[in-house]
Length: 322
Image (cartoon, rainbow, N blue to C red; front, side, top):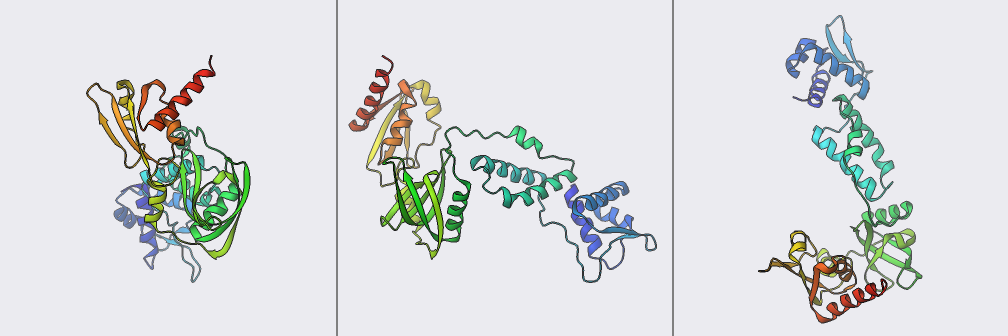
């Protein structure tokens, strides 16, 4: 029986009886020594403000409460591993979107740390041992993000001002939020745009203003969302129209063969040790960038227009070094 279980059992033993409970009874029920019972009582007083007192006349422990008062332990009962997992998740979220739920999670985080302290364990090790490195993440305005996330979860429409990088223009849209996507260290909002009467993806950091509307949003079925967003390559939506056939060198094959590029990808090890990867796509822009990062270790064998696009990028890049 671990420390937390003993705290809970001692609480049950004291709160369920009408008269004070002797130390020997607590030792028997908690399967521990007298010193351990005393230590647990001290920890309950220190960390949970438990009003537990010793009654000399009855030779037992009880809760010193006024009529009608009830003392309950905090409702967080996890194993040590589960507590560390919760704190690690909070640390991950703090790095993915700094400040997102700091206010909401602070009381929970403090309570978990109190419980860990009862076992003489600290949470400081997590920040030292778990590192999350953001490489290309773009900053999102916290207030705007919270408005978007709130409307998404409450299923309300949003009115947003959106600045598109491609055309360098700002537009106003009324949208029905469907999903928040965290992709390559950045946040995207999949939504039904009532201005365009179509599904669209919005980079959250390009939403310059957001206001939740009282109207309920339009819900798009999951299958329709998956067909529109998840079937193509990367962040670009749309039904796949092409299959990219990529051939990687034997040296690079050892890495790429274990990589996930697309849910419907197909990969084959070839006789010479090279690796052939087939990836469906509709918009080639993100795919071209992923191909280029492999440099001379990959060749696009088809389709011809994708092969030419990659070759043109390589030609232009080489021209900058001449």
